[in-house]
Image (cartoon, rainbow, N blue to C red):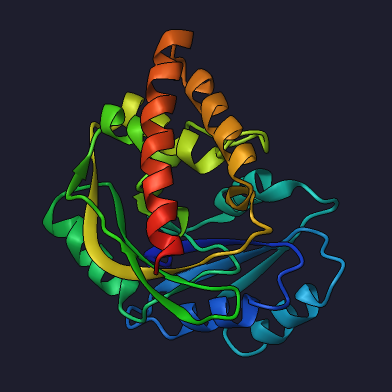
Length: 257
């Protein structure tokens, strides 16, 4: 790796993201930690997303653009970004989410202090219009495989993970929660725990149009994750029950915000 290589490669797929992508990119550019690259994967949008990315490229040399030849979906777009990443660490940021300015600085220090290759943070929330909500999803200090099966407490846009852990598990399915499946595979096969920094350094945008916005669809995708990572049918049903109860509690708190 070159001495000039960035410490962190940030992967941001973008499809029809014109309403939010400026805010997402700005939250990266405002990070107190400066040695990063932002890889934007433009997935054949039909709106103004590409021109907004091209405008941002002129303002910061740390931004890089990948243009997919056809619409590939978020999983394969992330794979394309990771194939081009130069950093030792990988972070993900969805094009409709944003970060607190100190996110990378605090999380890198946390990862190094705890000698942990897989970390995540707590999550704050905003509505579709960017208004902050009072609900906060805390990050437990440690998560192991069986704990994570009961509820996915790892928001993709909060993750900071060593690149070598990701190379074994390229995502290839839009029929499951691909990030949830990835975390489970890593905890099952590569490192026993992920560590959580319990601060709301991610601000997650709630959107009815997202994959998680349709509750029935999300529940089916979660069940497929359990089978995808090798759980037997009885085990998948058992953990799906846990997941459903905890998800209902979470959504109840969000509704009562």
